[in-house]
Structure formats: structure tokens, C-alpha cells
Image (cartoon, rainbow, N blue to C red):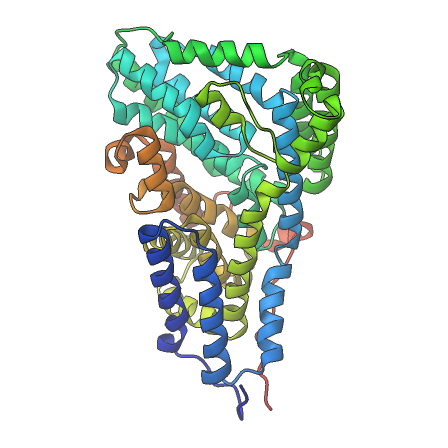
Amino acid sequence: MLGKRKPEPTLLISLIPVVILITALFFNIAILEGTGHIPLILGAIVAACVAGFVLGMPWKVIERGMTHGITTALPAILILVIVGLLIGIWIASGVVPIMIFYGLKILAPAYFLFATCLICALISLATGSSWSTAATVGLAMIGVGQALGINAGMTAGAVISGSYFGDKMSPLSDTTNLAPAVAGTQLFTHIRHMVYTTLPALIIALILYAILGLAIPATGSVETPEYLLMLDTLKATFNLTPWLLLAPAAVLFLVWQKTPALPALVVGVIVGALLLLLFQGQAGGEAPGGSVGRMVTALYSGYESNTGVASVDELLTRGGLINMLDTIALIIVALAFGGIMEASGMLECVAENILKLARSTGALITATIVSCIGMNALASDQYLAIIVPGRMYRNAFFKRGLHPKNLSRALEDSATLTSPLIPWNTCGAYMSTVLGVGCFTYLPYAFLNLLSPCISIFYGFTGITIEKIEDDPDTVVDAPVEREMQTV
């Protein structure tokens, strides 16, 4: 892997690892129904071989680029570890169950679609998972909607919109942690900046669902057997006292005080553990060590629900440290691939060819959003749709003096939110299978997912909420480094 001088990569050379990666991802995810881990490792190996044998980069430079790519995500990885603990303890303590219970109680026929979106938004915000929300409460809403005589596509669209609101905005969500890590900013800085696109999109979506609800009056009752069974099971399993809301209130207060993400989430874990010991002691005797043993188990391996009610058990069986390791491994290998591509200049070469048409901030944000949607379609994976464009366009945002939170917001406005709208994407395939409604059937009614990318592009061209690095320099975590030009 030695050469006289490292040559500049051409577009053709730069696309070799990308094409091989996308091909391997498609084969492994779409055909073998596997994950992206092995294709990403293969992509990293190919990228390293191209960098070493074709571009003449010394191994030490390749290794440095790879490890630099990984180290940029270490703060996010630490947060994901704490998030795993938080999810497990908040479910075991009853914090998540009481939020689900109150969410379901606000359901009413007159505003069914409006309430469905809002309930799914609250529950996904509490759990950080669009998949769990859609597969449990969302599926129940599909049944309720059928009982009311409402079009299944409309109900599914409301479920998708609400579920992906929390997937995008919750600090418990893996994509919400991944996007700022890739872009180079802080978690809560990223979340606060997303409010400007996501909240208007949610408000408009809720208004549209309310209009649809008035145009198509319900003909039945929301109190289906499955709906009532979920409420009764939650009430029987947990002590649902309003005091449990102290845990999310404490975290929200710390976020409002601009406390860094890690200590704020640690406080959430501590408060959740105290609430478990105080209010859920009646269930502790079933586990070795009583309530303390139940608490330790929830922190390490997550909460395991054994109520016998499938919808409740699927929603609440999650969390814990070990259940975060799969996501952490995916992030590490993806960033190793991105780090090699960045250090070798191949990522910059691809980005420069795309950015020849992007001569303004609006065009840059549009290019980012279109690239994320394209990666969702080509790679069939929302993680890759965040990581690859995120690494591609980081330098371009920094060169324009744009704060990386603009990039992280654009990544989530597009990569996260459009993933369930593509039938062959893992998210689209999952949602259509779980809800029993085709992607193209619910797509016109997934208002939040359709509106957010449009609002983001609009802000890019108008300059609304677009911030410079100089406006908030303390929240820039990782600035891109110049590629090394080694001679040997």
C-alpha cells in the first residue's frame, strides 16, 4: 500500500466502494432479510483496499481516518448506552405505561384521526421507537378505525405521522442520537433545532387530520375489545400514579435549562429507579432480589412484559444496555466506512460532483435532502441514509460557515421521515407488514413525513432558522479535518 504520492480519487474510483456497499446492502436486507452490519464491514474493506492499492495511502493514514470516524460518535454511543438504561427503567417503573395509558384515554370518535396521530406521537416520544409504537398502539388504532368505518390508509397515515414524530424528536431514539453525531453537534442542540421544522409539520398534519375527521364522520365506537384490554392490562400491571410523570418532567426541565444530554439522561435514570422502588414494589417479589433485582435487570437486559396480552407485551418488552449493542455496532462499522471514505478523499469527490449545482444554502440543503431520500431508496436502510450523506456534506456546511445542526436537522427531516414511505426500505416494509396497509396506500396521508422535508427546503432558500457556526460555536462537537496528503 505504498506509492510515490497519493493521487486524487476520480469519481469512478470513488463510486466503487459505494456501489459495492449498496449492492451488498440490497442483497442482505431485501433478499436475505438480514442487517446492514456485514455489508458495511465489506464496504469498509473495499474502501480500504481502494485507498491503499489504488490511491497509494499508507495503512496508518487509512487507520487514522477510520478511527477518527468512529471517535466522532463516541459521545453519541455513550448517550445510547444511557438511553438503553433509561428505556428499561422507565418501563419497569411505570413511567412509559402511564404515558401510554393517558394517551389512549384521550381517544374519541369525533376526532379519531387527530387523536390517533397525537397518541402515537406521545407514545413514540416516550419510548423513542416508531416501530414499537406502530406495531402495538398503531395496530390497535387500525382495528379501531376499521370499527369506525374509516379508510385504513388514513388511519395508517396518522399512525405513521405520530410514530415518526417521536422517532425524530425523542432523545431515546437511535436516529435522533445518530444524526448529531454524524453532523458534529450536540444531542439537545439538534433536538431544539428540529422543533422549527417538526412542530409546524405536526400542527399542519393535525389540522389536516381534524378536517378529514369532520369530512368523514365515524359510525361506530372506539371501545373495541382490544382497546379496552390494553387499558385494563396496563392498569392491572402497574401502579399508575401521576407521580410517575416526575421522571419525564425532570428531564424536560434539564433540557430547558440547556443541561448536556448525558447528565440530563442520567438524572432521568436515577429518578426512574427511585420511582420503581417507591411505586412498583408489589411486582418486585416475583424477581430474585425483589424490587432492587427487578431494577438491575431492567437496566441491564431491559424490561420483559409477561402480561399474556400480546399488544402490551410487544410494546413494553424492550430497553436495557444489551439491547443497544446492536445499534452501537452498526454505528461503529458505518462510521468506520465513512471515515475511510472521508480520509481518502473519495467522499469529498462524490460530494463535490453533486454540489456543482448547489451554489446557495438552499441548494445545499436540497441536495442533502434529495441524497438522503436517494440513499433510503438505494440502500434500503435509514441508518445509511443518515450516515453517508452526513459525512458527504459536512465539509460543505462548514465551508459555508453553517452550523452542523442545520445538517443534522436536514438529515432527520429526510432520511428518518421518508424511510417508511419506500416499500423496499426496511422501515417501509416493516410498517406496511405490521399495519396491513401498503406503503403507497398510506403515503398520501402520512402528512408529517411529507411536510418536514418541504419545510426544511423552504427554510434553506429563505434563510429562516438557518444558523451560522458563529451564532452557537460552543455546540459544535467535531469540525472536519483536512485530508492528509502523504508522500512516502
